[in-house]
Image 1 (spheres, rainbow, N blue to C red):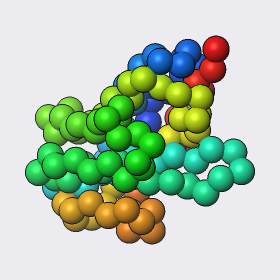
Image 2 (image 1 turned 120 degrees about the vertical axis):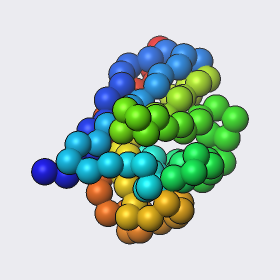
Image 3 (image 1 turned 135 degrees about the vertical axis):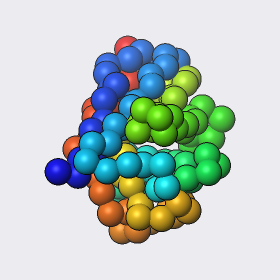
Length: 124
């Protein structure tokens, strides 16, 4: 069974940090681009960032530029999203998604496999 599983979501105070993980089972991530998306209540799913198969990263959401950074460890078949200086507006369910190719794309419909999401809540 092909599966992506996110973890690391939590309740954190403003200014805090979290590192989300996205682990794959049943298939390998090493030649795939992996995107991170988020969806807040009542809002559309938003592209946050992406890391290509070669390790190049792109930040799609201007609001997280300089604070969020994706990375990957292909030996562990896992991708990460480091989130620093968290703000209440970062509160959302965060999803990772994998493409069949190594290049990134902003649109969620370009991704073939999705995780179930992990909740990030930023609140004092």
